[in-house]
Length: 218
Image 1 (cartoon, rainbow, N blue to C red):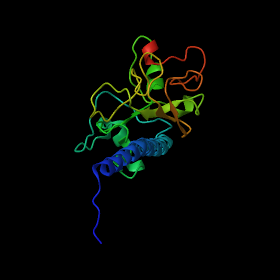
Image 2: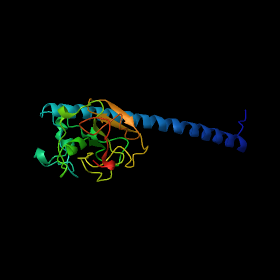
Image 3: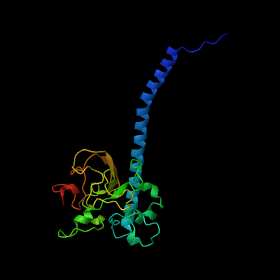
């Protein structure tokens, strides 16, 4: 029996069907990938939170102190010169992969340490970097211990990212932005698209009146 070849119209119909199926599939795949990245970032922050709190438990309730723009000190054995990520290396099994956010592939270290309370606790005449004391935090479930650096503006190689004077997770005008995970001192992680003064704080005294973030002054 002689086989019949496809007509041009039939081929065009097949191509059109494939195109429609592809158009329907790509958004679903993209959405699934985005959810996977979000879940991975939350897991990373959870591990970082455990490591930070374990570190504080062994260092008189003080978290590591973040400084300026400091790269990972691979060859330096002096802990006082290490960025905060390096200070908790031993608490995460030296797995530096947890510091890389799947949502920020261009940044080597995608998370920051919540250090603003340490800055605000210094004298008003001369604000200086300082470690955060866990015992001074009034609301552990609302205090920002860290987060994803969606709006980080300094070096992408900085391994000592902090929120002393920046807002790495939020737009600097306080408006709605990218939804990003925030790590709180009690260990839970929750995503927000803007700074909510009623739900979070970077100050020892907790939420309430005067709960400002870096773009609003001290």
